[in-house]
Structure formats: structure tokens, C-alpha cells
Image 1 (tube, rainbow, N blue to C red):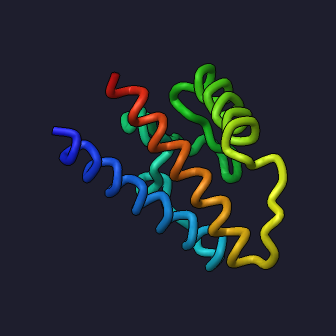
Image 2 (image 1 turned 120 degrees about the vertical axis):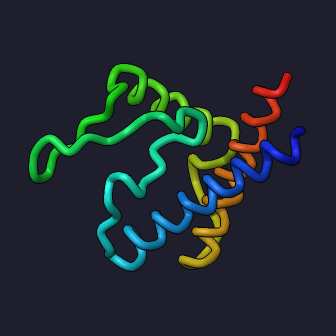
Length: 111
């Protein structure tokens, strides 16, 4: 059963990596319906309200969740300071920390 869930999350993680590479590294625009907003709340949608303003359906919980996650990443997974030199090593450092955090979260949710 956990293998099936791992494959499910892997497909979502692949989508997040793809959308991030497209948006951040290649400068492409990613349509709202193609974005993964949350790995654990897949039903969360983005609604475009104005030309440059995005609104989430769960705005109250969204910001609190993001701040808690980023705080946990900084405190527990070493994202306060990166000592690795160069852009490629920096990306590897960030991705390894985020993947480790997500794996620990998945493990915690299983118990």
C-alpha cells in the first residue's frame, strides 16, 4: 500500500519540479490549472481574480501552512544557511532538504 502512495506522491513531486523548472529557470508561464499548489491538499485550486493577483480557495490555512513548513525547513533541515558553492550545488542542497522534509512528513502521516 505504501508503494502505491509513494508513486502517487512521486507523480505530484515530478509535476512540482517540472512547473518550477519551467517557471523559474526557463521563464515560462504555467497555467493555474497545471500547477500543483499543495502535495497534501490536492483539491486546493488557484482562482485568477485580476491580472496579477491570485487567490487561493483556502487562504486562511494556506499562509499558516507555508510559514510552518518554511520554518521547519530552516530549523530542522538546514535551510538557514547553505555552505555549498555554486548554483548547481545550491539547487541540490535545497532539493535534498525539501525531499527529506517531504519524506519525513509522509512517514509521520502514515503513523
